[in-house]
Length: 364
Picture 1 (tube, rainbow, N blue to C red):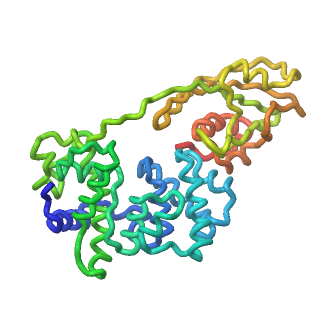
Picture 2 (picture 1 turned 60 degrees about the vertical axis):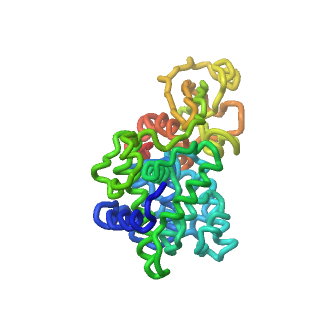
Picture 3 (picture 1 turned 90 degrees about the vertical axis):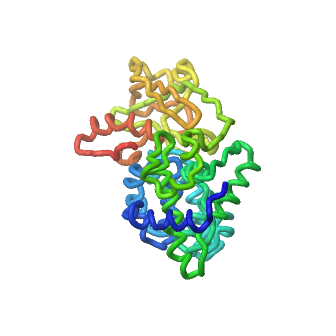
């Protein structure tokens, strides 16, 4: 781990200005609301997906005060399909705290930003660097990969003590200079590390010959960049089978319930979920006599869990509803609600069948 601080930073800054990504809609701005929103959306989500959601979110909620005043259903509705819905709930709570604690202005230091809901150390540093030129390091997944390869940092990042060591190295490599100079170099450097990890120093088959820091990169000299970063602890994948009741009225309305405040799809509107097919049938009143129709099974892949979704369509007579706390919703109504992506996709054909001129938002 002998990379010179200034040589490394200068090469990243120079490369980013000519070869990095410079035209994304959340770039070329010092507006912390837009930067913060993009950083939260980009967590474990591809840029191509965020490019669709980001402008739609801003059109409805253009600033932190509008977000703070919005209802949870509006926020989850705009987020529907992005996944990892705790991000949306924290986003809403964070906006409310920015208004309550800081008068609607984001704090200008990473230290204070980190005290807000949903903003961890790396996200706080990104906002402070991009918007305020603060000399502070980020360490997201892409940057960990770039730095561990460049430094040959082989310590196991599953151990918190080793991650703290990497944070120290990330801080050591930051650009130096006057506060005025850092106003330009810090955003460039921070974005440059992100861009390198996303476009050059990729997990598989990194394009080392195009990398601005290839000279002195330990992993390249060793000929085994894909061995970095080192993390031995892996979460075990599990799977669950869910039976979804798709109860429909003659006018096309669908019965939806709100999911519990904790767990998968917490707080979202959803078809009733049952662990077993017989539990689903028991939730129906005796007046339901139309035969059931099992729809194709859907596989929904979460970070460490596979959900096998079995939708069952049941026609419901007027005035009859399933057991549970829910309500009948039309396509126009559920389009504005926060729905899990597979449920939204499942409902789209029913919306078109009942309202041929209606075009629901596509799931991502």
